[in-house]
Image (cartoon, rainbow, N blue to C red):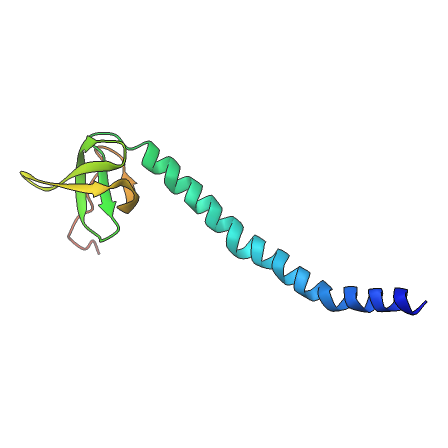
Length: 104
């Protein structure tokens, strides 16, 4: 009987650790995987003419799409080559720009 009692004691000791691993998965890992899938889908749907925001905060317009890189026009006549992974947000083509004036 002492072997069964030792096994039960060991299970009781490891149960909180197993619970923490499960909790960590549902609170940290799974949401991150969902965000990563959504980001990959967003990058796959990039097309010419889309307005984008880069991870550095620079706004621009897509002028060329390649496999791993895109050409982003950040000013009139200024085009930079950027990795697709550095795009943090894609705004729809023709999305209205926010007004600079405060409405009261």
